Image 1 (cartoon, helix red, strand yellow):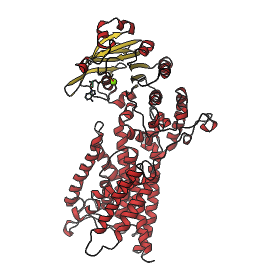
Image 2 (image 1 turned 180 degrees about the vertical axis):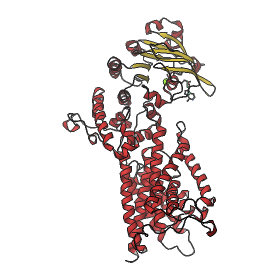
Image 3 (image 1 turned 90 degrees about the vertical axis):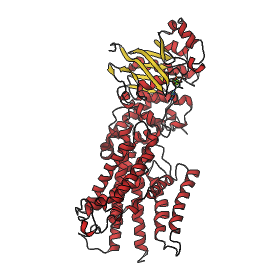
Image 4 (image 1 turned 90 degrees about the horizontal axis):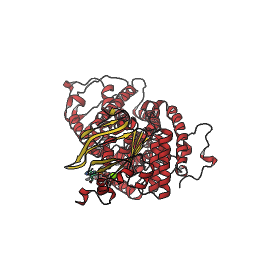
Length: 336
Length: 264
Ligand SMILES: Nc1ncnc2c1ncn2[C@@H]1O[C@H](COP(=O)(O)OP(=O)(O)OP(=O)(O)O)[C@@H](O)[C@H]1O
Ligand SMILES: [Mg+2]
């Protein structure tokens, strides 16, 4: 019991965080069709900035150096991390989202992410280079006197609350005219422009809102682990989020939940705590990556829309003005 | 300067793909409130001219005036916001949106499209959607598409997609519709209905039309003025009856066959 509960709590935290990440990528790709192949960069941005807002000042003499170091309370640092990620989303979006050549989006995001990765992991005054940030005081510990296990349970609750807020953000965008325009642009960018839609503006909104959720997820990881460094955001991590979204089903947020549970929790995180097999330390990570790849291929073959496909919006979901007849009063049979 | 009654005016428009001049010094004007046609052999550059006018292609040389203003090189979405709407030779519906949703995308001035309203005031978008949906029901009914409202647009038949294209354009409240072969692949009974719709929109909503069309019976029936293009140039302008007397037009197009360049 002493081991199982904290373990389950840890898995729950990862589940909640991956839900937020998958919804973020869903806003970018599932809604607006933006091929963001550097999603993890936004996660890292949220983690780093929440870190340097919450940590004390770094000191070159002690071998730890980073910008800011403001010692702000963690919840505020989290918001700052999310905002920083959102801004980075706009910057990378401006580079990658070009009205004429949308097919280059994927490779440009990847390239930009690689540049940022090289910069952050080598330029130590920013986020302490490859050693990264460390030594974050447990969030809330300035107000509460709790041990580490109690903190883990508290963090489950905190992540839960943040996740619900993110769910509302993602759902409200999806169900608004903005979400409809995003999906129209995803379906046919040129035709949407021919109807007066500014596809660059709308895709930038999707890019930066997805990045905000990514930043929130990164900040939650930072707060939980207390440290963050470049080993934690290699491009393989972007692949995990993509796999979760594709396996679960894009264009709807329940698909994201299923995908993050299957891919990120069951396969990715749960296997992380299996003790390494003696003499073959890389076996488990290798098998894990193969499992994720195989589940992705299986879904694309058997059920390309994902486990939970995008829901068809039926007309009666739209409220009509008073006095209009509704489809229930019989206009003819609905299609299919 | 464009004349007062020319709603759309194209001057010396040229465009080449690589070294190939698809549109070559093309000049014509379309009077306000007219239904005009742009005809010419396959490969004459009609669709390219449509793309240039609508802002989907960047004009290389020449000028486009719309509604008294120079709109050369304005991007497509800005042309649409000024009231010039184009459709495509091959239907470009949003396949994974339902027919109803396809009609709710075009209307201009949707306040629910702002991020602020989407996040914090969803009722703004919902209320506007309710009004747009009732209007869309009327439009769908006019085009006989109401029973298909919940179908994915990608599942419609070719003819139904053409009707959807026009219905969708109508929802955008345009001043000018640039239709690239709206009747392509449509049976005669439906053609009669489509040209009825075009005339209704001109008479009731005052929309000016320019149709690219190969069906000369339709052109003769509904168009006030015809522009003939061949080899990227405007060859002639006038009524269909006048053009039938024009030996150049007869040789280039009415006599049949491909564009000269394509035949060699
Ligand atoms: N993107 C492109 N790249 C290269 N060549 C092109 C391109 N688009 C059109 N062309 C060429 O330009 C010429 C004019 O094409 P366009 O589509 O404008 O003809 P059209 O008059 O619309 O013909 P149709 O009646 O068959 O639709 C053709 O010879 C075509 O091959
Ligand atoms: Mg054409």
